[in-house]
Image 1 (cartoon, helix red, strand yellow):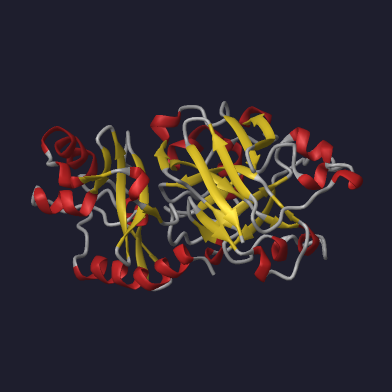
Image 2: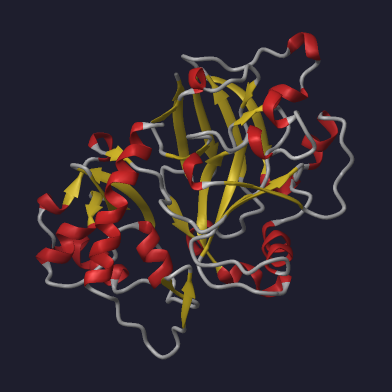
Length: 341
């Protein structure tokens, strides 16, 4: 288990307790949706114009916002201006803006230097801490399907990861603890849902999206291919890094016009564009919402482009190993780095 994941498990109860101790007011347009004994907001007021992240302050996961002055310490800023604010990205997504946009503007204009921290000095936590669902789309880039000798899918191929896979920017994936040998990278655009979506149309689908992030569907191919079900090659601890940030959808624009790249030890391995997706983001959200209800905070990995190791000729397949450093880059969304141990 990664250090970031241990921090999250230790502090999630603290964050959850704080949220319960001071329940957030919901206006009449925000219908409460009970989910497994908790309460989610079906249609929260989604934040706009923000680049958000989770990071560690001591042993606690807290919310930060990237600004021109550095990373805003949201909790400290809320105290300084005597207002309430979300405590993590999950809180922000599930319960709405809660005045965060206004607080950021005030802090940038009037806040003291102590409200900000240099990004190079923070320890990132997973950009999302507790999604109800982590959904993945397989073979969703045309050139990737071709390189692996698979037909172009006629419908989205869905599979899943779990919360144990969540990992952070600058985190580690302990492949030495996994009973496998064929470790592979998969650079992926991640969709983060912002509203409850059930049976939505393609035309409406992206209006339900909170934002987007850089993700990595790290995979053990030899486990994946043991059967027709891919799950066991996808769900090992730490196999789902997301981050460094989540950008609200208005900052991203068209999610299907983004350059996407994967580097291994500084060498580019994947270089493509999200416009090669077989099913674009609107189609993915719409299709998935007709299978099951998507909730605020749910995560969708949208597939990987060509260039994966499993797509190489067998005599050229050199699998990843401890010591390798991976960096996933997506235009506008930031560079996600992690190391194998």
